[in-house]
Amino acid sequence: MSDAYQVISFVENQNMKIEILEYQNLGGNDNFTVAEKLYYAQKSNIKLRQVRITLKNSSLTAEAGALQLMKGNITLKSLGGSGAKGFFKGLASNVLANESMIKPQYQGSGIIYLEPSFKHYMIVELDNEEIIADKGLFYACESSVSVSVQAMKNISSAIVGGEGLFQTKVSGSGFCVFEIPVPEDELVEFEIQNETVQVDGNFTLFRVGNIDFTVEKSSKSIFGSVASGEGLLQTFRGTGKVIIAPTLPVYQKLVHALTPTPPEK
Image 1: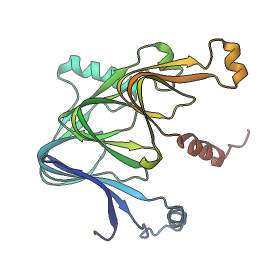
Image 2: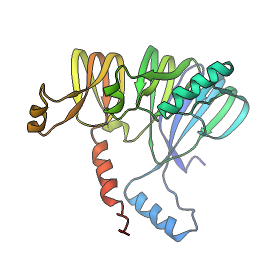
Image 3: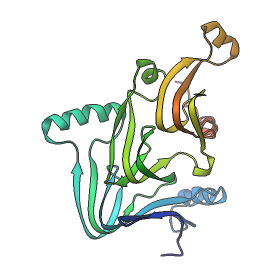
């Protein structure tokens, strides 16, 4: 089994060990169409990856549906708010945030494998701090870390910014795993001190620290925005870090270009 994959990243403390596995070859399918796709995926260096967590008498919170298998003395409970009021409050905010309301918590000692995918994973260690993540990026964390929703401060950010009314807030101390759309080494981190970062597009993945997010015109007048060829910009002001994926729009354009256009009726 160890020859099937490589451990490409890992962290460990007294509570758990988190590993990112990368499978080197996928050659066992007996469907010719699938085999052809796997062949070209291999030639393009597209690899299947999986998150493995070893619990040491500790607990893990994961996204709903992420579990593939677990081995050992591990119990499972679901976290969805306390009582009917907490349930419906969580339901409302999580539906708007496009996140799963019920997040399972795994407690005990043993090994957990989460569902494999062709996406990329990033491990972050929080030290009594919080990170605001784009919706859909949260995957798992130590249960010492709190996962909630962060409401947008103004309507323009929610409607025009492409993020919706809520994002995911992860806070506290401990390890977190995020499922990211590009390789980690393609992310760019800007550290700002009472400064501004403006982004033309929806490819900012994380922000850390005391940073406000708004959507603004690229110049003071609408005519200036039109003349400059730019429209509305995602704007981040304050002190902290802004983490973006500048290559993401390129991948999205390629997907769009390669998607067949349905025939006209």
